[in-house]
Image (tube, rainbow, N blue to C red; front, side, top):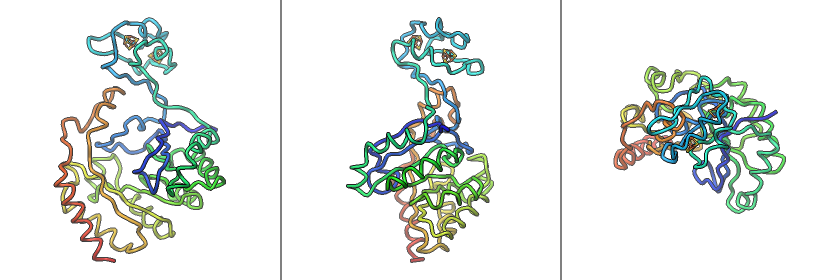
Length: 298
Ligand code: SF4
Ligand code: SF4
């Protein structure tokens, strides 16, 4: 049994306590318009291109047995309907303009790779974080990988959008030390428009998860023109207030444009194209606002 991952990011300091290795699983059931990891949307391995690297030699076009490629003025045109993702063009490309994103991997191989950083985990109180995409879409792989980490004494964290069946979350409870769960938008209609799903099941799962005694940090990406206002952030904070000290933490994440190039590389339309970064002033003001509301409950 194998899982499909994009990468294992080593030495991460943003995905939980201490130094961590973060395993990104492929496949997501949401389509957040501000996503900066669109390579995790599809659960399959994909062909991607860095257009700036292409020297126009045409080797890839000649190599492709499926006739999926054509030379265009600024980049290679990929017909993704006929591409079989065989990887032959990647081998043929002399400039590294083409690459495959995604890898099938067994849980024991994932464990072998993360164990390279065991000394850092021990020294810093870090461990392994599984992110995505939505990692709970690959339950078989995820359960086995986390069980192997447990056996090795590696501290585990999981990032989830919680838009999944509760029985999946419940299955993982004994294997996860720390949960990081997004609550993106309070208004249900806006949430549906921005992510593709309503937030009702997410709220229910969050309530059950915190009620179970699990350690949970809730996070909200603050996105210009979506939820960068006191009404949205205030409503989320007031919803979280009733959890009191049972909630381990609440964090705002600042929207950035670092993932924009990935959309073109994968042949996807970027729904947020042209959107500026969230200003530091706006972000800090909302962070202080959230802190003020949540501190009144402690
Ligand atoms: S991955 Fe294979 S099928 Fe797809 S474009 Fe490259 S050579 Fe053609
Ligand atoms: S083989 Fe690489 S460099 Fe040559 S045309 Fe194809 S993508 Fe461009």
